[in-house]
Image (tube, rainbow, N blue to C red):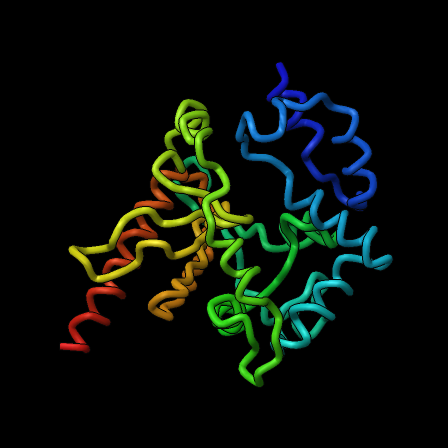
Length: 254
């Protein structure tokens, strides 16, 4: 019953603001006491709202000032203009009989409101700039964005003893640890080629971003078909792609 109520409350509606979402979620009881339970949630949406309140401006302006502008991510924004909209790759969903259905306009309209958990339009090149900055804490021009302490904090497992709660809820991320907003890879890829401790996250459609501060390897994978595949399949795809990259990197060193 709680899950159904939460899912309904967390769903963003067109033309809705993050303030409206915050109010609706705040009326629900906690699913558990802090530190006693882990659940996948709209926490990024709430964090985005907290940034708006603390910085006294909208989330798109906050991100532009603190992240997008310093990294020169010139093709990353919440509301693409007419020129940029024409360059956006089509987004497709497969019909029950396998036909590709163009859902680009629907997705752009649904994610038009700046919110912490969704809505940004970007490119692979811009996301690689973000990966590099997260690994070094600096932009390509040397502007400090993250201190070493902040990076270490993000890389540290904050789930700890409640890991079993994650496994009992879902096996999808059961083997992974969790830092601040990122999953932590617990194993080494392809017989010692690297990857353990790398940080990653998966998009709902199967896209993923992964970066390894120890080896300096960053991976951005993007696809145009918005699929209803299982998270386990997304994780498997990421593992195979990452293994191939680490294996190639290891062979070049020999």
